[in-house]
Length: 397
Image (cartoon, rainbow, N blue to C red; front, top):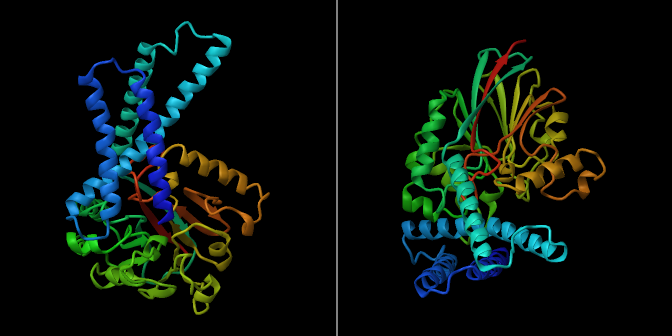
């Protein structure tokens, strides 16, 4: 709850700063100033209504979806506008000291021109980001695993993480995801955590299970938990996981290992937030490592665990690859710092990953960290992609 109140405070201050900078450039005409002020007032009202009514059941799904989308979109808008306007203020300060520019940045017309230019730039970037979000890409790779698989020589794995089904990502978007997954003609489907965003109430309201039940594959549809499955919204600790298994028809692997078609093992790890989470060596005590071993693990911390345990393929999610600029750049820089070995594993920050996105072979283990299909918060991909991962595996021993 504290995080959300901090978000409100930040939203108010950033909105006020943007409003003031825009107001300084506006002509002294009521028919311009009144609509301008009304936009900011209306947005804050929508944000507060959405914040205080979400989860109360007092508003229908469509209204909450609209409020949530507007609030999160405005949040990203204020971040980008604030960055550009701060750069303008910095340039104005430097120019006031050194006079390096041929124009007067303090003039009203110049202020308006700069403000409108920033609006156009942010609007264009966010439009592009929205397109990238609603048009997922398929990342396809061929992998060789030199192990015996008696009855399955080739396996087409379709992996998707971070669907975040709920108020923001509704039934229509999930339907598009399911269509896209099924178009890949999977032999097996893996959903590696954060399938649900926050609560299950919105899923019941939309009858979201009808979309998940369309997922079919010869060797099954499997899921594992993510950190969002363990976010407590007052509905009960196991409510979301119960919905996934009973209503969505998914086989949820919670620190579970199964042998599929007498040919390969699939291991589903609990998320780091699970207090009773087992170690990977514990899970693999009864595994015959002469057979291929595939691991689903939501958060890509301690990649050496999968490698040391003898997994052949490991699929991760969680990071969203930063979701939008500049967070993706921060992840890349923190990854580079972490990989220097300067910071011990037990002292690193939670947002530091050996590999925040993409493919890596660590020892004999093929690892892929997906940027995910859905998002939590603003529905924009700026500097990242929404993706489905297809792994064409050949067992060739």
